[in-house]
Image (cartoon, rainbow, N blue to C red; front, side):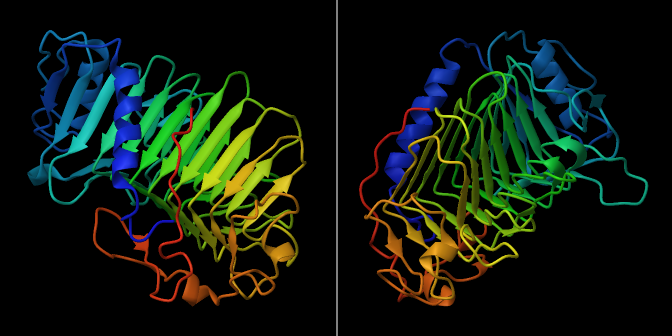
Length: 390
């Protein structure tokens, strides 16, 4: 279980390396594009840099380097804030940046994360920040994505139709959408490591799933891996932290914390909501703290709620709930293996919420985290994990 991102770093780095290697096997001759201007300024700005990388051509102040492989866009510390004010493209919802349709890494070079955000000023239209399309692979390192607001999916990032997304040392914060307030993954692949998904919101009328992350297979497979990361303070009607949907979806959460997320619909899933009506879904959650999540009616599924029971789901070696809830109030029936620690009132380690996990704070590292108090039963309770195929 996560203890201020100190558990099993080597395992996480190895998994990230393996996935990154797979994604990069078909590309070579990488080029670096240095951003030299804020959005709309004189020089090479972020919008022009993405267009240049997508098209392998000079765009605006960005000079193409003749590369047909993956490109790395570098955001220097002296230009740390990139503020979007207009819609760049309107397809599957408005997006502030050009669609990602090639292999691109965007990396903040400073000690603090580079900020890519929608302007918080009157008159700014609604749009998400990123959309990754078929053929696109986006890696973000040391980036803060904030302020996206879209009538559709993915307020911060929308990965669709076979796109690929890797987040490392990133924060996705204060975004809003109908579905997938922070991140929406539809028929695509995402890997989130050493990152935080915080204070995002999803409220489509009658639905509104995945305040933090929405994972959904519709016409293809959807896979998601979350490692050494924090999912906190997100809201949605259903599945406020993470929502998982579709028979051809595969989700793995390892060494992470899911806390203080809040679902508003009576159907539940404050931390994780799983729509499991058709067999074939794969969900594995291991060495993870899931505590302090809520929905308005006190019955099963405050922390984890499953709708339907078609698939065999794997929840092992997690710390779940707190003593303010009974086990049946915290978790839907039939989800948990005996290896889980239950901090619920009738569980095997009944513990008050503040004895399980502390409020979100800057505990060192690139993102905000929930530290563990000295008495937390999560400390030293993790077991060796296995590489999960996604």
